[in-house]
Length: 426
Ligand code: MN
Image (cartoon, rainbow, N blue to C red; front, side, top):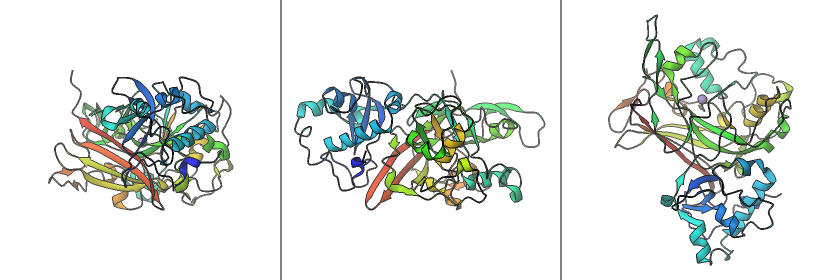
């Protein structure tokens, strides 16, 4: 099925600002609470949220095989499980309905009243129920920076890194949407020079600039997904802030990797931008530095040119851009990650979330964590209000944004923005 929805020449009868992340070519999917306190699945054009449940009830998806309640749910899991053909048919239809030439809904005031919402009338929810969350470690710049700081600059990458898309299983219970505040975690740390740990608030709370892909039902137990089929099982992407407590991490991570340093919160942007919408922004991945095993070899462009930025906004002050990076820097791409994840027969389900790992670029201003940007705290960053940051302070808001732009069409992700609150008190 052709991607009519991506037609760059199409305009909508809904207003779209010139620099909007959500032109009619985007058509992302999300879940929101309406002014009437109803949860529904929706999309967005410009600053208008569109209730897909209402559109479906009013017959606008006639001819597309969809169950009656597919959009009247509090997660996208079932819709995602319907597969790529359905996602495409629905995106194409939405493009038609809101095309500037189509007067059907445009001239139906009654229908518009139940279908369209201003953004201040809705509250975005988590778009999927995440069954399993995996986080990779796929940026060579990030892995090199961390290896240089904590081990040995001459052997910054561990021997497996150029052979395996390294990852770990995270925790889905603490995945939250943009807007939900995060409390500074407490835990065990080993103070410098001490031989015994202490308990208390983490002093080194950090962000990790990541993107994450969301999968559909992909395989049965025991069945690997060949790399050339992997893309079929990727629904779309979101921005991910994988909050991290560096002092807790340093003490706990040997030998089994991150645990409480990572599972206190991971926040995602609420609109899932489909892989289909990102089609025009494909680029080559970095060339492998070492021969890769056959199951990890792929053909074609499997990376995406997505500009990323991170801002820190101290309470009551202006925001400060602290990093500009790009998703295209990832050494291991998504098809390699998914092929590797399932090569042993591990099943992947609809709504699983796969984090890229911290996305650091080649220059100091493109690093994806405060750990790297401030180089362990040795080079504090200056804020516009005169304060400095080595890591994240209480009441700072961390904001991540991402967008693609080519030939005058911009497709974006909006933002993931969460405030760090002081330690939880009952
Ligand atoms: Mn991470």
